[in-house]
Image (cartoon, rainbow, N blue to C red; front, side):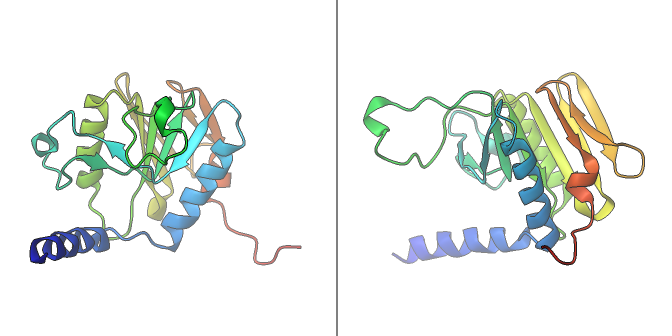
Amino acid sequence: MTELIEIEAETFADEVGDMPSKNHSLIMGRITGLLFNDERFIVMPELSLDTSQIDLNQFNLKAKDELIPDVCVYLELPEEPEDELDNDILRMTQMPELVIEILSPKQPINEILLKFKAYFTLGIKSCWLVIPSVKVIKIYSAKGNNIFDIQHDNEVIDEIIGIRLPIQKIFGKIAATRS
């Protein structure tokens, strides 16, 4: 029992270090909403991905057998075994085409970049690094990297997945009052 409590305390301590902020939550909601409105995509925030088929230690990650991106995007609804239709799935074995990670104020960028290496090894095609403090989205893929920022770009374009999002709708200010 003591071992379980220690493991849970260690996990909690790890999670507190990169605890999402208001801007993190706001940006995640905006991106999720924009993608959700496009019927081509199945959008799943904070979905647990089963990584047991690879050793995450090779990427210097603390996680053991799962990674939880801020947003996962599938082009097709993940298949479910017949006997699990009535039961929820705790870890997805089918990887999404796109994962989006939003940098939290106390989270090191290198931590996310290490996750991206693991995601690519798992077969994920595109990874976005969203940095709210400087209003930048960097898209990583096997074809290379692209950087989009609110100062120079009107859209975020992911050619691998076929996504075009207005950058102002991701990073723009919130209206003070709503009717």
